[in-house]
Length: 296
Image (cartoon, rainbow, N blue to C red; front, side, top):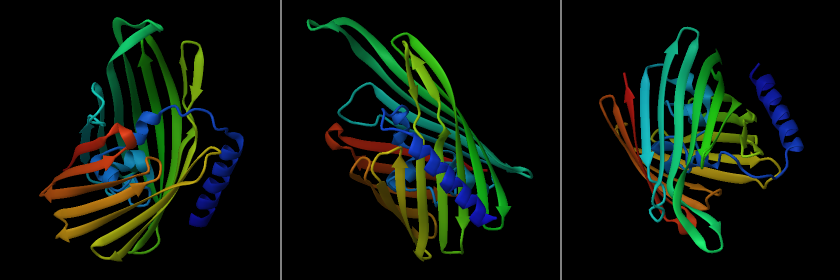
């Protein structure tokens, strides 16, 4: 059963990418990630996916942890860019029929000047706002195989124009043994279509395959490959080291999409997890993210 599901998804992904072209990249705002923990791992989280942030990275992983979890993250993204805000909210809970989750990703850019001609700005400004709602479902098929789905509502408004689109993600997470797991994710297996001012953009399907291996009980390494349409193969890698009784964890990673490294720390006290991540993004500057996860 596990081998059949993995093969079916891989074949489906191959069909998608054979049909897709380079095109633009609608929804690029979501590349900024979901939660601070995964960001510090270079967003290499498809095969780890063991908390509420799995909503975005691999919804199949939600059934790994069935307790009620609530998360949030905020960042002003690039220190050199004013008026740009980005954040996430998420909640997940397990039930007898499976685990469900709800995630919100938002991005806003304010005070963008209108430029009508070569004479320069007109003095008026507008804003660009994007938001994604993710409705997640996960269920254990066997003791070591979990499946997951996201249905998505995407909303984009800019300069008085607004549009809404709908999409679907599909995912698998397989726990091979206590040390090794693999995750498979097809984001936008059905891509949302956004129409703004006569132009239609379609979210491009993305194929992610990741692995996570515990070299020692306190150290996990997670490499991942990432393909979008006919674009070149991209990769990321993250590591997480538990330095003190699951209460303090150091993290690091690299993501070839941004061609930048990342680092972070996680602190857990009782049922509260606090996370911080830091990374660079070319000439745009530093990116700091602050997040939390509450467990009930």
